[in-house]
Length: 416
Image (cartoon, rainbow, N blue to C red; front, top):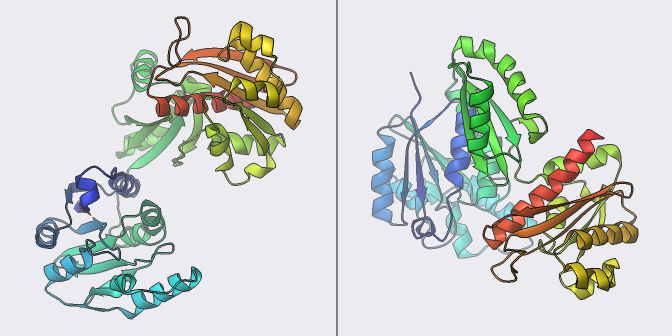
């Protein structure tokens, strides 16, 4: 019998668009990984009567109801109160939740105030779900035939609680006998339609038993292979191998990783080869450096980068000849190659990326439209440069330029 799972998301900020809902995506992905699928998802505002009524209704059609949000210290955090009302019980001081709050405050060298203490009052008969990073514990309670689990709305807290507490608990309570096999391939450099057309062309005999899906998570594209029937499970390894050979270096990893930047894959390659990288950034304004230093262990491969936004600083910091800037302009092959050489000389790194472009909406010329960018990459022995035109919004442009730049070095490393 299929386990029925419903999700209830609460928060005025979700309803009015102040916050983008990423938590239900996280919940769906992790539930799907253990063979559970969501039957119904509801998002409602912070209104006590509305919340209580929805909890009752959703619990009547589910084995599990996951409630996300509304466990904080402020007056509009109403999940505990609504849950107590739906279960026809009172709120009471939960000693475990109170102890958790005191420990949380002590670690931060702060005093608990009355709004904080609100988070220790939970529905009578409920249990806590440990939250290793935040102030609000989760709540677990049975309502009729439905198990209700409440989690905070902070994505980082939800992520830890899912991994450490909730998913293992659900796996024990609702074991899946015919679990779906799922393989994720993280790819870069090919769009969904192009990839689907390629698969259709090369594999007209793709088996019906293996479902193929795509999830665009800029800058990466995730390709998912999923099977549930015995024949599909037998064929999965063979067809994964065929697809991997077809995509080649477009594949970053195969497994269940869910990284969001190519730096996640580049930094380990540099660490393994014991080589360092430097950067000379103009239009990306330090974004590439930020993505590299976000990875644990980056200090072993990255010592310095240069953000030279003006022509004056390109000359002063990277020794780009003034004549080059006058003759070719900042967005040119000659300039990015000079930036790359200057960064290598100043840092003594092994590899370099240099970028200069027009992010827009202003700054375009007739021969250099908005979205123009030159990227140089390589080492002291081999420096290359390539022109791209990426006519998208400013922030999207910067993200794509950063991703393409890092990927060019990644490809260079894996081919050496």
